[in-house]
Amino acid sequence: MAGTGTDSGAGMVAQRPARGLEGVARIPGDKSISHRALMLGALAIGETRICGLLEGEDVRRTAEAMRALGAAIRREGDGVWRVAGRGIGAITEPEDVLDMGNSGTAARLLAGILASHPVFSVLTGDASLRRRPMRRVITPLATCGAAFAARDGGRMPLAITGTAAAMPIAYRLPVASAQVKSAILLAGLNARGVTTVEEPVATRDHSENMLRHFGASVVVSEDQVGGRVIELAGQPELRAADIVVPGDPSSAAFPLVAALLVPGSAISLPGIGLNPLRTGLFATLAEMGAAITISNRRISGGEPVGDLAVAHGALVGIDVAPERAPSMIDEYPILAVAAACARGVTRLRGLAELRVKESDRLAATMALLAGNGVAVENEGDDLIIHGTGAPPAGGGMVATGMDHRIAMSALVLGLASVAPVAIDEARFIETSFPGFAALMNGLGAAIAPL
Ligand code: S3P
Picture 1 (cartoon, rainbow, N blue to C red):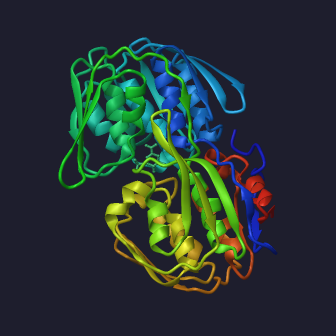
Picture 2 (tube, rainbow, N blue to C red):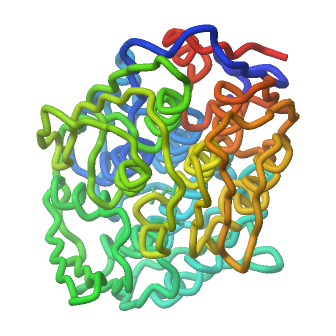
Picture 3 (cartoon, rainbow, N blue to C red):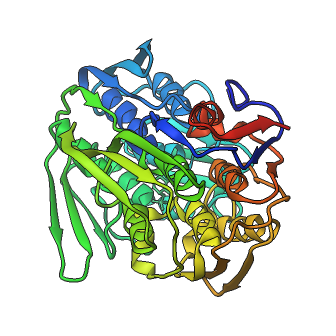
């Protein structure tokens, strides 16, 4: 599936457009919410209708996997999908290995579902996903009674022998991870009793919101210092519920930063998800001097949504505290691009988790900047970027390392640099943002195949 659509082909190159970016950017559906909609739809009784589903490669993998577990899933039209669920406890054993492609979210959340069902399964993925740590879900999920076998270092392929009598898990997350939290909650759906997850720092709560939307009882209590305890009552009857998926704020980040950086730009981005645990980038850019306006705030399908508008403007460097990380964990590469074009030093603190994303994003972000004439340093888990306020030199060829966000960040840098910026491989953009180059060019960008 990777390699289809407008962003296929080997490399791509982006250069400064003659004029500013203008128009309306219609952002594809939220990736996190799309995965969860398919999974919970498949575990609910009845037919769930999803509008605005992200039709990227990662989410298609989840659809395939839920089909292999017995759900009937069909595409009705553009972003409109129907999922006929089997109910909790009723999934069937997959006949073959489940290939989750590039998607850590798909693999980890699915591992949670599989752990508490009496089926044998094997999960694998592409070379990027097979390098990523799975022990962070194996350790808590094993306490429900499931058995796991993985490669050295807890890497995929991962074999799971699920249990017929799952114990409810009680676990305090050692790292801030919505994927680990969600895997445990999904396992708890088929456990007797109350599953409890304690997170020292709040992470995106789409699972909690959507579980409630499907009729589960989820109780959340907050402590004084930003942590949360989430309690899920086991074996609820999930009832099919329609879902409207908002535009993905993590995808909106790319045209939004491009508009900030290209002189003369003014764009709008309607219908973007504004879950407060996802909007760290918007707050950070505002602190850097960006004028981002949000209008028509509303609640859609249990999630806050709004329309964004942004215009070109000068940015200044700032110090970004590590506490910001969970609310913009996927946005650091594009934030680093914005910082490279700002005036002054930006210090991004506490980025350890970036090392275990689709690529080692700390190293990849440094290489992306350094290869295009930006002064950048790494101290421990911090990234320090020295912006001059003038456009970076550009001219580099960026190795994307199977990482969609590095690919898109590099192309946005190319739109703002003196010389064009090229990427070695564009096809992984399809995992999260199908049609990225076409959308950007529709706004006036200059992105072309190499
Ligand atoms: C996601 C959680 C984040 C994020 C990923 C999607 C999710 O990962 O990086 O792109 O949908 O739960 P972690 O929770 O592991 O940080």
